[in-house]
Length: 217
Image (cartoon, rainbow, N blue to C red):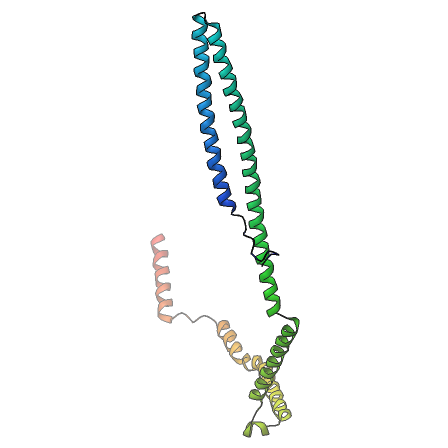
């Protein structure tokens, strides 16, 4: 979209800004290290001049040390500001990404709503119901008897089926009575007396008993 000036407003490149801030932060840290070394050097010089009883030179060293320390403090404050800006930009980046995702989602839902109108849904459901009803009618038509089968009287067929069921029931009721003679024959067979012992075997048994009696005398 064009602004009032007629030119599109360029969106800030957060990643590029973060990269520049990080580079600047590294430079400040390097400068801080340099000034820390200078402070150490001035302290050593002040000690040497103190030993040499050169008070004026030692004081000059301490003055330079103070200046370096002030610069270190200034560099530290700048580093804190940069860290603060980096945190803000990173938070803004996360917020922007979230907002972009929400916009995409909203646009997708809006596009889907354009496709899925309530009238279209009702129309689709009516078509489905109509097709289902047509299929039912077709199935009923296919199962309807045609030709000679259509001339059969359903009442006569049901009456014939009832007669067959009655005959089957009567046959089941009469079946135990027809099986009685076989059972009677079986019982009679079990009640027959044992076979008579042959006469020859009885005579032999009598002779053996007489012989045992004689031997006992």
